[in-house]
Length: 603
Ligand code: SF4
Image (cartoon, rainbow, N blue to C red; front, side):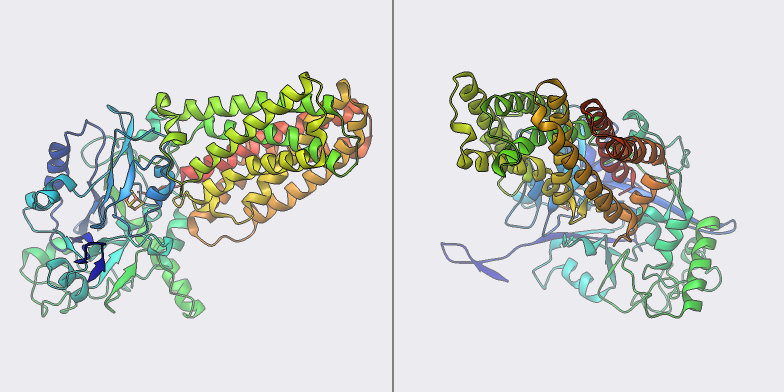
């Protein structure tokens, strides 16, 4: 393949990896070579080997899967990185530069494969970069060179004469989560479902040689319970073809020189691949590790698959060796606090501006000035929380000075900077007794900036491809509604203190906002979701470990009580009290919404 480069037509190079699971012996040479090559500290890995065991003695086998960055053709990590610390090279390698990274962890939310981690020595993101320094000097990645079984094939996927292209076209290969649209270039021959789809195996407390390493505990979270029902459903809906009875063990077939693959691996039935021809579909081409293709099957067949999946999970698939999960809760209290303070900041000015613009209340420079002051206070808190969340807080200004314009972190930073500047002008105008900011044109500008501040985070979350629940198309509207509620709470309190004219409209806005909030929570949490991960995150909010903050905090305190108060009376203290309760409820909702999806395993 060729493309035009300005100086002429040059060949396209697009590097990728194939991991041949028939050859991998799980020796970890690739892991060690990678750590040595990059001088990585203890506890983090750019590549690692996951062990899955199946069966019961003596019919057992162990599957190895080498995990790493997929060097996606459409990489969400490079899109969301605000400072181009990650980028796609012209040869298809997704590279990174620790010197540019600000440690915002957006890439870790964007990557659906848990390929990135925060390096404890540099406090910046890191991942497999295909040993780009070696490639530039004509050498292969260190893991390829060291593998004793030639199980890792690296090369140009556009060149028909390379071994990698030959392998991809001759063998059935699997890729992880192709439905994410990231176009991963890490392919597995004989990919094991239990390894490639994280939800199908439990993260045990003890591994085969040691306690499980756990960044979960290091980061203050709790270990997740294994949801066997979800795992069974995922396995039953995958493209794996189950044998009706337990098949022969791989190790057995390796030692006697033959296997039960029936020639499906291309060997003519006499190799040592250990593959059971009933164990995987063999229609060739790239298959999804989690694609659903069972819709045409009969109910009986589906029930049978579920039963067999339960059997496999209960009796066979066990994750016995892995690394700590890097993705877990990379956005913590700073982020759900920031979305809350940002809602208050945007709403505190948005609602008064809207009320003046629509002539529901008289334009009032003093009210606008005080609203801008409150808004500015919460915007300052928002900025502080954003900086606190960075692993490299001293580099925060690089978001503005070294922008990657495809990232909503950058767009958001410019939006809140513009909003902050506008707030300053409104306050200044109020102090200088200028009435210019209650002019309709100025109120329109205020409304636009406040709305943009309220909703931009929804687009940032939708760039977080690793978190399925955040892909809700209703999020921008929901964030706008949350800002209206927060704004109504602030105006209700201002009405209680000094501005009588705000009391009645605050009551209406709060009531309407809460009703819309209920409808949007219902549509985002209770309606069916498109993926298992989103379904599971929603289930953890409504029935799992987040159910108390959700039902008591977000729904009870945040919606039911304020609605009852608003219906019960129209006095200023009652409306102000309802506003405070609504703010508490919004905080509880942000906590659940931002934390629950991050507890879903991606590795
Ligand atoms: Fe690698 Fe993940 Fe980025 Fe894909 S999204 S290129 S797997 S870090």
